[in-house]
Length: 322
Ligand code: PAZ
Image (cartoon, rainbow, N blue to C red; front, side, top):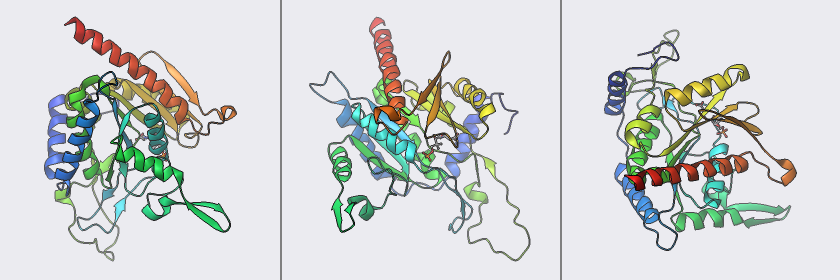
């Protein structure tokens, strides 16, 4: 169902759309494995002794989802997202002491190796000079984070995989209440071809223009906030190419999906500046080259961690008063 922008879809209609999306999605091939990894990761990080309690866990989503056009997929719709934002942010969350579930598009940028694609061989090597290549220290950092259960990497490709995995993450980290954060940088497809109405085999050319109906992907952010993990601190991103409508759209997303914060960014300047929109503020965050920091995520994550701390303290006080 498509309503004029700004109008809320009735909850029962949204629930029915979401149910239909999940019922018709091809089941995740490795769902038992993902679920086991998630359970263990969250358990280990919530049972820390000598650290003043549980470690906070953030789910960073990164990269774009694809929309398959055929069940035995030859062609798909994709988007521009490189995963740079998610990879850089993961590094700063780890530095700030968070455990990170990195839900990322296969083949996109990885933490500590952002300029390289997710290629296991390439990831390991670094050019020292014309005649020397060495194993990267960044690899060591990634492997240490994974080995110490501070980083759990979960790859997806399609919109179906992404949303099923996001739901699994939410159901698992619901147990740590306000200590959980969602940081949703992934560029998620807005339209998809429902599995049941998708051609099974490669679509044949030669019979004129292709006529295909794409259905709107149900807006999962509201159910994530209200039902899947209602105590988690949620930050979503809003990207526009027209800077004139960016802040208005971010503000709308904040209210419509009950996000705690929305990070607004414009396509061309997204690596230099973002604006963090809350219910009563618009905070511009810029990369600060003069401090030798080459990315905007450094200051951004510092701000979000600060706000998350206040959120956790307020939630703890409320619980204490009950
Ligand atoms: O992945 P990337 O670093 O190339 O780009 C990041 C981004 C622009 C996808 C992200 O900051 C963002 O805005 N994500 C949400 C996109 C949306 O409005 O759906």
